[in-house]
Length: 59
Image: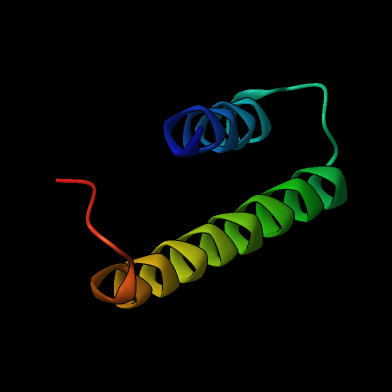
C-alpha cells in the first residue's frame, strides 16, 4: 500500500511539473500539496519504524 501511494504521489508530481495546461498558481498549489503529502507519508513511516521494535514478532 505504501508503494502504491508513493507511486501515486510521484505521478501527480510529474503531471503537475510537465502539464502545459496548468497555470502557474495551479501548478504551484499541486506541487505544494504533493510535497506536503509526501512529507506526511515519510513522517508516518518514521513513526512506524520507531514503534516496530515494540510490536510482537511473528516468527
